[in-house]
Length: 250
Ligand code: PGA
Image (tube, rainbow, N blue to C red):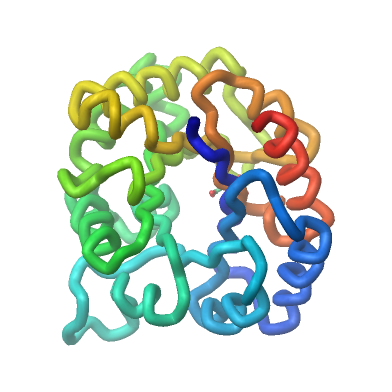
């Protein structure tokens, strides 16, 4: 019922030459049975859209400002990302929550701006290692979820990415049981807030050290609708087997 989605987050990696990775992915996956989204640095969005013209691959941003325009030097609005060709934007990634001190209230404002601009908001949540070790994971997720997801969220415009901070870029992943527990919890909370019709349609991604070697196991977990992939999305040779694993699970 929910179409699977694999999203690649290139972070601060990627020059024009790296668009060749998209060309390679499009050649290998001309008619995917899942949604594929790549979020390159904003400098490459327009060129990436041109590279993917006529293909099924979508292009997204990695962050946006909460306002549509204004005196915010260096920032980009959701409207600008949309105008450049993006169809989605990641908001609340833990690297932004940590390095840019973004609160869940800020994340909610950004997600709302994404919706207003006609973009899908990929809203990231996740606990730190200390929070998990203190058995606070579900409390942290509950708080982030209620504060970061705006009332404008619906199945058609919102994806939730569960990304434990300690799993990002570390090579560590939670057990399937741990991922399943958090995804079930998120789904239940979304159902309470938005009703089953909307909550059942919202895709829940897992993110954090997803690789070709562990993708199939992660995609077999009930309520995992795909993945948000960092390092392994940079090269078509790494991302392609992850796409295949998700197609097999679809
Ligand atoms: P990773 O990053 O796959 O490199 O762990 C995931 C993310 O930050 O979204």
